[in-house]
Length: 279
Ligand SMILES: C[S@@+](CC[C@H](N)C(=O)[O-])C[C@H]1O[C@@H](n2cnc3c(N)ncnc32)[C@H](O)[C@@H]1O
Image 1 (tube, helix red, strand yellow):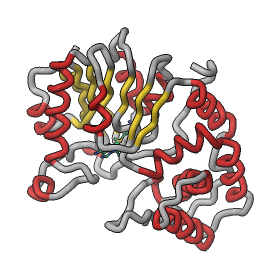
Image 2 (cartoon, helix red, strand yellow):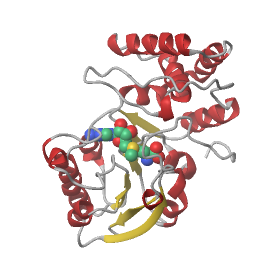
Image 3 (cartoon, helix red, strand yellow):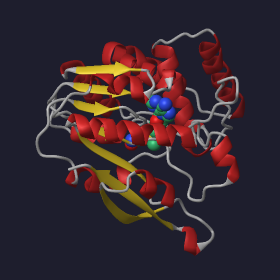
């Protein structure tokens, strides 16, 4: 690891693993060769673990991959752009102006330090830190009506950038199955795909849920089995729901309570999740 300082995720990300990090770390294998994380998201696991091994991380979200790439290659420019935006107190007009600028970058397929800075800034100023795009792929989350001060902890951002620079890391934007084509015996793969819904409705079987369909969950389970046969060590986290238990029957399934976001209904403030391993 490049520094002994603890690193924290820069973005709030749906399905972020900060709350159950201890459980994930406890359940990891002691020894492995290469580290794979095909669904990187907010990178809470990678940043906490900071493996001193060849690392292969991936996410299908092109802007998210640009953010990590820019941190690695262009961190001072990203910090400068975020600070520039933070220098004016935020209001509704400013938020929608920034959102338009960000969507223009998406439309023109521009992946640069400014796009990364906009992604960070919008994440801090949008409703609930959500990342949601419309059918055309444009970010459409409304303003949170709060006026924050700084959008980043500069020291944390620099420590992460330093880690990304000094580690042996490959960052890709591919489908999870593609990035796993190179996994070998003895490698460790941590899968944190989008969650399966708590109740499987007819719409989930036909359409995608969070962009991840029933067919994707089945494809992931087949890949898990293939990698298991190959001799890789695999861990997967998801909701504790019958679909997931059925797909991974026969593997080690550890189930536990998790706190959900504040819900008016006290019965819905806890959910159950699973960590599944083949070792
Ligand atoms: C639950 S999140 C990962 C959260 C992450 N572990 C964290 O702590 O923030 C799932 C991620 O999978 C990505 N994703 C969805 N479909 C994918 C696919 N087919 N291949 C690769 N990544 C995908 C999403 O963009 C999202 O960032």
